Amino acid sequence: MLNPTTITLLLISLALLPAFFVKSDPLVAWLKRKRYQYEVTVPLYMLTPTEQFIFNSLLFLCLAIMFIAAGLYLPDHIMKISGRVYYYVNGDS
Image (cartoon, rainbow, N blue to C red):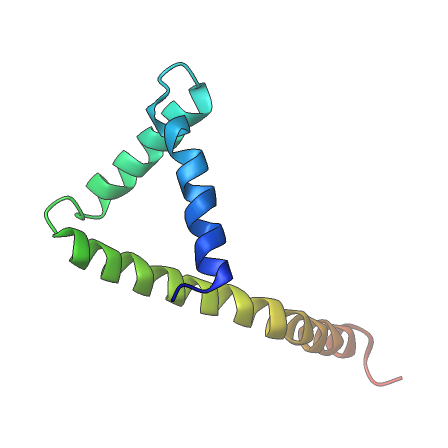
């Protein structure tokens, strides 16, 4: 049994599918070109579709973890660094 989220995503993807076959839209052409550049730059074109899915999933997972970690820990780290810079410039007050 499919859950409602999966059904919703499938319906959205089916609704957007015809947009990728329209050649006159410059945004679609630009997205297709970027996807092609990505597949050629990272040699994905020589992998099977399953291997491509696994590689892209792992890449997305790593990037998502890095962005989440940067969003959570970077502001505190910047505050610590700015406090140390203030201490080195102005001394103990």
